[in-house]
Image: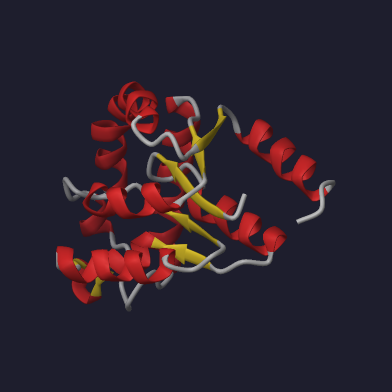
Amino acid sequence: MQRVIVIGTTGSGKTTLARALADHLGVPHGEQDAWNHQPGWQAAPTEQFRAQVAAFTAGERWVMDGNYAKARDLGWARADTLVWLDYPGLVVFWRVLSRTVRRVVTRQELWNGNRETLRGALNADSPVPWFFRTHWRRRRETPALAATFPNLTVVRLRSPAQARAWLVALSLMPA
């Protein structure tokens, strides 16, 4: 594992796992959400976003998290490992709901000065509705999509406990 992509439904824990993995491997971590969510929750222009992904993935060793189709051809083609957090819907729903509530209440700053708000949490593009629009579709589509990238070793983790055990097993191996 030299170049790793971590994917999963919003709220599944992609960034948390990717950071832990990058720390373990001693490599840079890239977060696609940070590149995409510009101030005022504006999406980065596609060309700008793709340039960020291209620059980050040009390195020899890295871990990046995110599901953005607009640069999948870059990241997935350059990666050697795809870690898929394929958790049950109820687990992810609870995580995204509790995370959203926590962020609204604490006014936690996310990317580029953005914060989740109660009004924003009720928006159709906020994490909870996004979960319902994408979770089951991605579960159906990801296996075939990953198969189109023969360079990838796919690690499909089906529960948070399995993800923790996988990280523990990696820590027993030299980086």
